[in-house]
Length: 158
Image 1 (cartoon, rainbow, N blue to C red):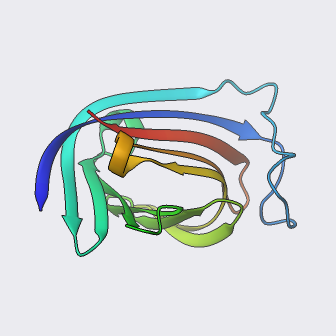
Image 2 (image 1 turned 135 degrees about the vertical axis):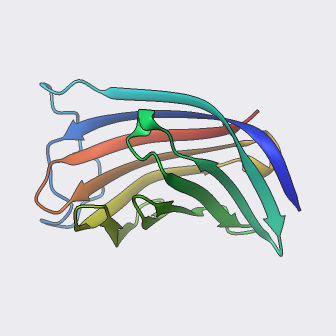
């Protein structure tokens, strides 16, 4: 079943002072870089909600505001496994990010310029899409060789 839906995305990103590649961490020491201003993005858009064979997916087109115009993002999980959420980006930029509270996952982030190795450490996953129509993620992402960023991401189905 595919349903057209209105989507609200709220994201706050800020640089943190640590490296995910350097050592094992539980994320507690990741505090905001005092000199860096947080970047807040809020988008209201339309997308699709798909439910098929126990798989639930919300997808939407990225915009110029996010810097990923020309890409489609899909947020996916399996019913009964709401604690593991995948975010797939396809198009101008592409990657597969896996979010699982307390876990670190590595992936490759492909851009028009070159691919980057990325490490994602998920602090929390609050997946209430089925009953309350939202998913909230709190995670640290680091591109090898660059500063890490903490992101608090929330997607609501309106």
